[in-house]
Length: 478
Ligand SMILES: Nc1ncnc2c1ncn2[C@@H]1O[C@H](COP(=O)(O)OP(=O)(O)OP(=O)(O)O)[C@@H](O)[C@H]1O
Ligand SMILES: [Mg+2]
Image (tube, rainbow, N blue to C red; front, side, top):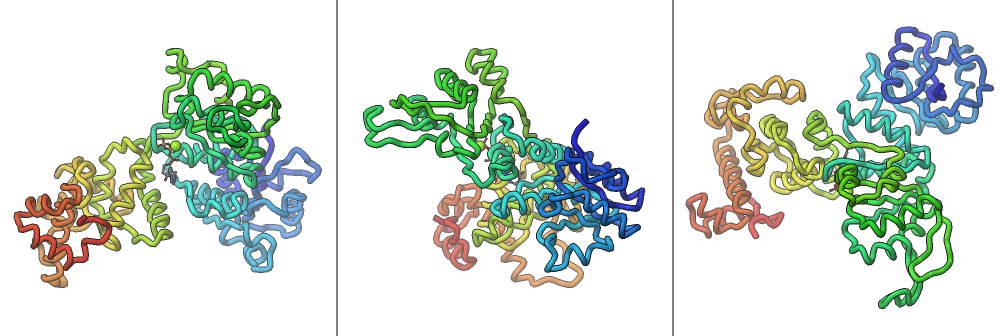
C-alpha cells in the first residue's frame, strides 16, 4: 500500500470527502486525521496538512500532533473559514510563510495551484518565483502530479515532447522540487555540440589531452556533482558517445579525457528529446540499453494545441515576465484570443511566449485585436468562426464586444457604429490609422518604404506619422 502523505484535519464529513478526493486526483495519498490512530506510524512521509473545520479542538490538536517533526516544515492547506485561520496566519506563527488558502466549494485548479506555489516557495527557496510553470488543463495537472511524485527520488527521467513544449522547464522544476535543489542544475545540449567535443564537455579533460587543451577543465558531470545534469536533445547524441554515457549511468564513474583516474559521480540525470526514440532504436540510431536506463520515468509533454485552455494563464505568466523586464503588458482582445485558439502552434509554448513579447513591444498597454496579430495567427478567423465563437469566448471568460458588421465579426469592434456615450473622433481615427500603419509595418517586416507603398503614401509622410505616433521605438521603423 502506498504511504499516506497528506494529513486531512476536517470534521465535516462532506468537506473531508471532497478534499480527500481532490488530493487523490492530484496524485497524493491523503488520510483523515480521525482515521489515524497514533503518531507512531513512522511510515508516514508527510508532504502537506489540510486544516479545515475544527469540530472538537482537543481532537484536532491530537490529529495535528500526528505530523510529528514534519509540523516544522510541511506546507499547510488552510480552509479560508477554518477556526484555526487566525492562529496559523498570525505574523508570529511559524506556519505563516507556508500557508496556502483553500476555498469551498473546492476547485481542483485552485488547489493544484496553491500546492504548486507552496512547494515553489518552500522547496525552490523563491528562486523559481521568477518563472512560474503554469497550466491548469487536465494534461498539465497530470504532469504536475507526476513531477511532484518523481522529484524526491533520484530516478532518471526522460522528458519527451515537441519543440517548445517546456521540456527544459520541467527538468528545472523537478530539480527545484528535489532534495538536490541547493546543488547545481547543469544543462547541456547534446545536439548543439560537435560529437568530437561532447566527450570533453561532459567528462572534462586533462591538460594536453588534445591540441588546444592548454589547461585541465572540469566537465558537466563534475560541475553537476550532487545536483542534476540535464541532457537536452539526447536523441542527437552519437552512438559512440551513447556507449560512454551508458557506462557512467551504470557504474557511476568516469574519466576526464586524457586522464587515467576514475572519478565517482553523484548526479541525477534528466534527459529530453523531441525525437521518437523508439523509432531511432528501430533505425539503429539509438541504443536500446541506454534508452531503458534513461527512461526509468518517462514524461510526455502535451502540445499546446491539445490544451488551448491554458492560453490565458500562459499569456498572463509571460506578461508578468515582461513586466519584470520593464516591458508593458499586452492585452489580447476577444477577437485576438479567438484567433489564437484556432491556430495550431507548431512552436508550442515558446512560440506563444515570443508572440506575447512581440505584441507587447508593438502595442504596449492597449488591447490587441485579431487584425493586429501577425498574419499567420489571424488566418484562421473566418467570419463564420468569429460569429460562432461566442461559446468559446464565454468559456474563456472573455467579454465579447457588440458586433454587427463584417468588420466587427472579424475584429470584435465595429468602427462604424457610434458608441452610446459618443466618441472622441480624432482619437478614434488616429487609432485606426495607427492600427493600419502597424499592420503595414508588420507585413513588410518593418521596412518603412514598403509599408508606405502598401498604404499608398510617400515614404516621408509615413516617417512623419511614425514620429508623430512615437512608433519608431522598438526598432519598428528601422
Ligand atoms: N508550463 C509553462 N509555464 C510557463 N512557461 C512555460 C511553460 N512551458 C514552457 N514555458 C516557457 O516556454 C519557453 C520554452 O520552454 P522550454 O525551453 O522549457 O521548452 P523545450 O521543450 O525545452 O523547447 P525546445 O524543444 O525548443 O528545446 C520558455 O520560455 C519557458 O519558460
Ligand atoms: Mg529545450
